[in-house]
Image (cartoon, rainbow, N blue to C red):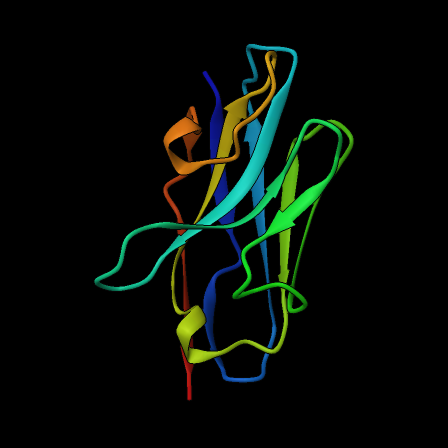
Length: 124
């Protein structure tokens, strides 16, 4: 059973930085794609960053240039470096995994496993 456990959330002022981590374990297939999603209060969950099977990384326009996602070779640790944080970055951040044997879609609806999330709060 795949388990994803996020950590690193917290409260910082606008302009600050946070580093989120996701510990992944229990893989049952040979290929997975990992990504970060977030859900702001009163809004739908949205994609933040996604790492495809070839290692390419895509970001949402709202975080491009400020956030950096990375993973280790074994895909057991996914990180999200968040810089120049804004109040609109506030929300619950989730790590997610998609079985990638036949390729990955990188969409919320296609993710097969989810962590419970870590809360990020950015004050003005």
